[in-house]
Each structure stands twice: as structure tokens, then as C-alpha cells.
Image: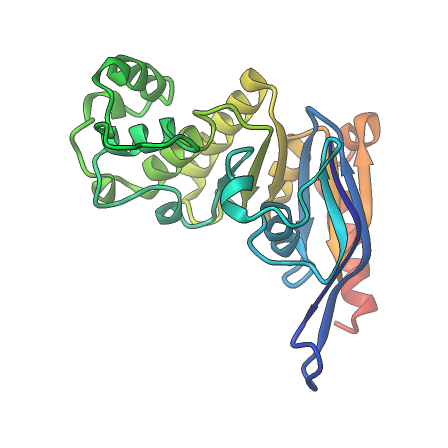
Length: 257
């Protein structure tokens, strides 16, 4: 279980531009849940992910994974337990390294490299099998540099690489936003498959309302650092895009738009 307890986060503290993003924010995510998160720009979606991953510090509150308090755990240590796929396909892979070298890096996440070769030749067949599961023909391009791949291919690799080692949480930060519609569909199908097969606790931020409705078993809508909608189980399954649009329209009217 993941718990955010009484989280407060301010930006530009002590200046005329001081902004409170979160004030006494609480969230619990049960083991095995797939949570879709939607909300307008500036609602706190990505900042919430950054807080979970340790990319930005909090001003007060606590963060727990199970019974362990990870509030002050550095980001690189959290990465051993959390896999993350970013909006930009370039951020999840190393463009100047080959597919094989990228797979080896992901395979050794959290381990000491020492002076041993970075690529274990005994693992190459495993890498081919993993890449073959993507259905993109990458298993036959192990010597190709990742920078030569399309955005969709790189994002598929980033998804695969983030889940190669055992993790407790998968964080998806608008991971289809930079892709064309056809490629985005492929990545979402792969996402659903990976989450189901590995039984991963997942938090997915998305601007695509259809993906938010179709994927996951819980839906959060964020607004001004608060969860103004939180539906799970049968209530989430009964949601449709029109329900989300109605809520967005209500927010727009509230904000004077």
C-alpha cells in the first residue's frame, strides 16, 4: 500500500509569487490497484507523481510504502521499488546506446556493476524474448542505437525497461501524450497487458479521458491540489467520458471561464 499523509507543498515560499499546491493532502493506494488520474493543467497531477518518486521534496507530511516511511528516502533509492515512464519517450531510454545495452542497464537497476561487463551474454536470449512480446520487431535490432527508433518504439522499450526488475509501483506520467493516436493505442494495450501480467500497483496520469475511463479500477480527478472525484470498483466501471466532461465544465464555471 502507498500512503500520502497530510502532504503540504508550497512553491516560491516567502515571495509575492508564493503558491500552495497541496495543503493537508491525503491519498491511499491499495496493493494491486490501477489508478487513472485526470485534471486540468496545474491541478497537481504530475507534482503528486514527483512527490511519490522523490523528485521534489514536501514541506510537511509523510509518505509510506507499506509500513516503511520513505519521506526522506532519496529518489535513486525509491527507483529500486518504483518504475516510471515519462511523457517524453527520450527520458526513459539512453539514445546513444544500443537496444541491447539499454536492456542490460534496465536489467541491472539497483545492482552494483563493479568491474564486470555491463552486458551479460547469457541474458541476451531473455532480452530477445522480452522485446518480442512488444510485437514491434525490436528483438532483431539489438545492435541498433535507441536514438534511431521511433517515439512509439522508444516508449514501448521504456515501459518494458521500467518493469524488468521487480518493482512495487508503476508510475505512468502522461506516457502516451507525445505519440500519434495509433501508436498511443498500441502503448496503452501494452500497458494494460504488462500491468495485468505483473499485477503491478499503478498510477497513470493522462489527459485522454477515454483511457482514464477504459483503463484501471479507480479514477481520481484532481483540481487545485485536491481530489474532487474518487471513484473505484463498480462506481468507476459505470463512469463514462460524459461524466468527466460534466465535472470539467463545472470546474470551468467555478473558475469563471
